Image (cartoon, rainbow, N blue to C red; front, top):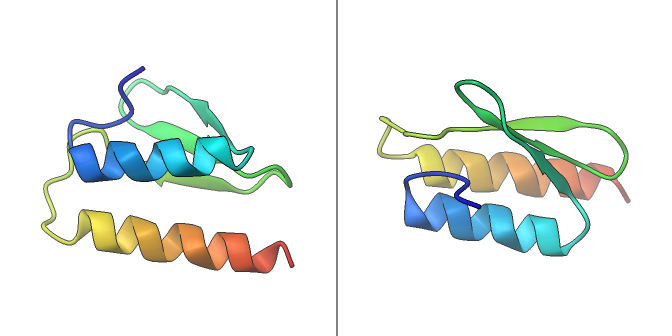
Length: 67
């Protein structure tokens, strides 16, 4: 399954899926859902050059909230 057109974002999503998170495809954006129910929106075609860094930061903060 292709999670994003940006290879670095797709690889990041795969890492979190391996940790037990789930991915749901939407019409415009995918959603990465934590095991405890929080949702992060995954850009399919990111236009911001910092999209990967922003997403990585958001996912790390969400992961830290689980502890």
